Amino acid sequence: MVLNLREKFRYAIACPTSMGVRITPDNRMAVHNSNHYYMQATSAESNVLNVASSLGNECLVLTKFVKGSPIAQFIKSDLRSRNINYEGVEVDQGGPWGYRHQFNIADSGFGMRAPRVWNDRAGEVGRTLDASEFDFDRIFGEEGVAILHISGLIAAMSPETTQFCLACAEAAKKYGTLVSFDLNHRATFWKGREEELHAAFHKIASVADILVGNEEDFQLCLGFKGPEAGGKDILGKIESFKGMISEVMVKYPNAKVYGTTLRQVISANEHMWGCLLHADGQWCVEEPRQIQVMDRIGGGDGFTGGLLYGLLKGWEPAQCAQFGWATGVLAASSLNDYAQPADEKQVWDIYAGNARVQR
Image (cartoon, rainbow, N blue to C red; front, top):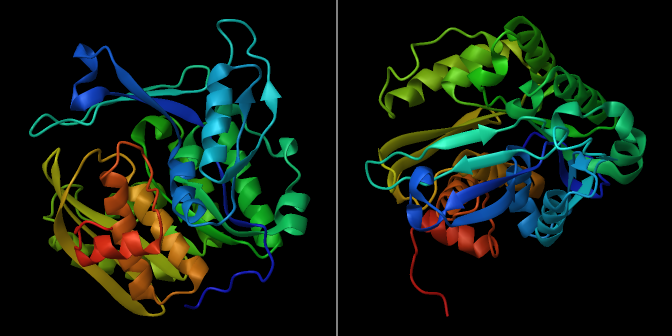
C-alpha cells in the first residue's frame, strides 16, 4: 500500500467527536410503543475506532464532558471497556437548561417497518469543542497518532467543531499523521451554513490521505456533479462512482485511498451489501451480497473501521476492502452501533460466509 505510516505512535487512530448515548427499544419494537430500552455510548467517530481498538490497538477520542454527569461517567466507563482512551475538559452543567450529552433515540425496524431515528441534541456539550482545550504537540508530536479520523458529522455540527476539526487536521499533518475523512453529509447540519462548510470540507479533503463517502456525499460536500441521488440501482452505482472518483483524484491528489459502501435495502432485516475501494491505482470491488441485519446503524462506520485497520496493518487494497466489507456486516449483526470483532479470524470467517459454530 502506498500510504506511509509514521514509525512511532502511541495511538493507532484518534478522532474528534461528541460522545452521547443511544437508546433502542428491546425486541425490535418501535420507539413510540416501547417502555423498555437498551442504552449504549455512541458517536459515529468512536464507532470507527472500535475495530482497531477491539483488535488490540490503543485509540483515542478527543471530546468534552459534562462535569458530574452520570451520563458522562457511563460514556467514560464504556470507552475504557472498548480499549478507547479519551481526553476532554469537563464543564459545569450550568443548571437544568445548560449542557448535556446528546440522546439518540432509535429503533431497529422490522420487516417492511423501517428503522426510525430521532436525534435530541439540544445543549450538546460536544458542540463547543475548541483546540485550546487540547495539547496537540503532546498528542500528535510526543505520543504520536498513526491516523486521524474525521467525520463530516463532527466537522459540520457547529461553527466551533468545524474550526476544531480544521485545527486537528493541521496538527496531524504537522506531525506526519495520516488523515482519514468520511464526508458523511447530513442536511440538517448544513442548513444555512452551506458556503462555510463547503470551504471547510474542501480544506480537510485537500490534506486527507483517505477519503470515504458515497456518491451523494461527494456531490453535496465537495460540489462534484453527478446523477440525481437515488436514480441508480446498486450495480449501476459502481460505474457511476468510479467515474466520479476519477474527477475527485484530479481535484484532491493528496488522497491515495478512496472508498464507499453499497447498500440496497430489501427489508429492515435484509440488505444487499457491497463496497468499492480505489488504492494503488487499482479498483477493488466487493459486489453486493445479501446479508441479514439486526440493526443497520453503524454499518458504514464498521466498513471504515475495517478499512483503516487494514491500512494500519499494511495490507494490500483488496484485503482492506474485504476486511472493511466484513466489519460492516459485523456491525449490522449487532445491536451496538459499532463492530466489535473477537479476533481477525471472526472477520475473515464472515467474509468467507463461514457461519458454522466455532468450538
